[in-house]
Image: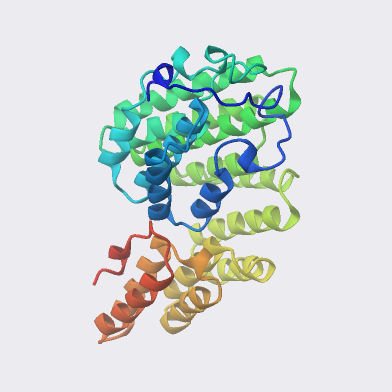
Length: 361
């Protein structure tokens, strides 16, 4: 998008200070029909988002530069969710350097008289790093993730005096580090992962998700004492609501039991999680796996089937369905018919980005 070439004469946007700390009346105050885009994404209606973006562009409904960037971000996200990565890349290539003056508020003083800084959505910067990885160019994607981490940390220094904005950028830092760690874990580069997480924790950023991930990595390299210490630290945190934190602690304990092959105790912890939160998909899936290890295949299948019936929007993920189909293959001679019935049901309730091939029909 060449922002300079747009013939724009809209009404100036209402005054605002820092967009991250300013209270807007609604999502639609941020961008054209943003609430509708957000609702579609929450429902997994990614094809509808592509249609909506195409319509808005064809009818020239996007009247400001930041509207174009916001819709571009949703379009790239929709293509990525639908695993149409080449099309996502084509969209990204319509934008030149993300730090170009074309994408700064002060370049358009008549439209944004009180704003300055970049108008590029953070999600677009993240997708700019993610899409190359999805296309198989891992090194390019990792390089971009590290550049994004530098960008985020630069913003944190700028926003030190603005508490609300600083909190947002800290969360983004944790998000980017988690992305980088995930990629390094795929290559079994555990040392790099430990260094990245410990660097954040040493600064006093005791995020319970980070601590739990540290524990998981320590378990993978055989440092069970270190893992237990990390999991114990999670119990001391208070940054999550009570149920979410208690369930995280229980799931961590269950993992320790799994390592010790104490599946009965692990099931007990997962049961406690499910009792507190019937939509805890991780606990549901892992309980079923423990029951399978205990050679209780029928109950294992029942756990997963019940979750799909009760909370399909949460339980319907590829990992759970793959596990259920594997159990069908172990338990039934006519597993192909059963999996076909499951696949037909999934086609009616699943979001657009669900990978139906996980049923292995």
